[in-house]
Length: 206
Image 1: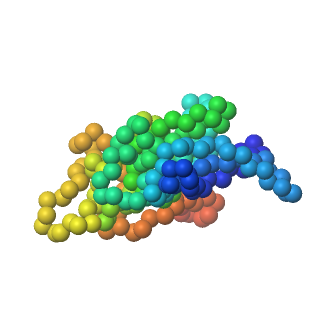
Image 2: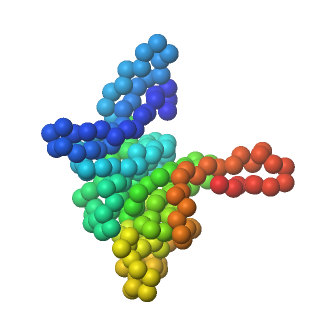
Image 3: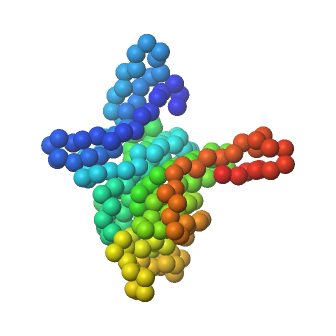
C-alpha cells in the first residue's frame, strides 16, 4: 500500500512464553527492506492461527483487515465472544493512526480472507469443529457465533447424542454463514475469478 510492504507473522513473546501475531511495515526497496513494527498486540496464546490480512477502507479510512485465531482449538473457548480479547476476531487497523478495533467476532480458526474493494465485500473462510467449515460475509459489528453455534460437533460427539452447539445461528441472534460444509472440506482461501476468464461463464464468481 502506497509503496509500503506489510507482512504478518507469528511471533513468540519470551516474557509470557506464548505466541501472538505481529505486522511489520517497510518501504519497498530492491536493495534492502527495513521493516519496523506496525501492530504488536501483547495478548498471546499457546498457539495462534490466522494472520490473514487485506487492504480495506472502513468509513473513509484506509486500513488493514486482519484475522486472529486461538489455534490451540479447545472445543469451547470464551475469547471469540469476549470484547476484551483479540482472538476469534477480525480486526481493523487504521493505517494513519495505527489504531486497532474489533471489526467482527465469533470466529473459530480463520483460514482465508478476501476483500472485493469494488463491491465492498469481505469474505472469510474458517474451519469448524468436526464439520461446519464456513464461508462468511463479514460485516462490521456482527457476531458469527463461535462457540455458541456451529454446524460442526465436538470431537467427542457420538451419533445419537444431543448436539452440543446450536445449529441455527439466526435463532440465537447471530450471523448465519453463507455456506457451511458438513462434513468439513478443510477449507482454505477464496479467490475471485476475473470476469475475463470466460466469455460465457463465471461472471462475479468467487
